[in-house]
Length: 79
Image 1 (cartoon, rainbow, N blue to C red):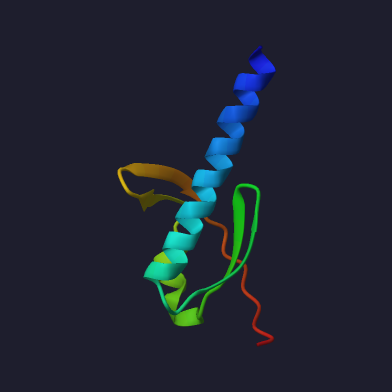
Image 2: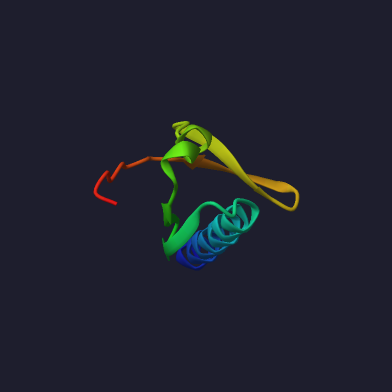
């Protein structure tokens, strides 16, 4: 059944994305992971670190797989 295969692929991809987000936070101690929602994550990033994460498209890596990722940086100067 195509739905079963589709479910398995999407669920595996979302799980892998979560692992990549956690790995990114663990490798960069200056950023704080606030939430993972399906295949998206919310991080708190100090302003001086924006340059590292402001690329529109980049890759998150874990083990031997690279996950193409679109990063959107939202600036909140209130903090």
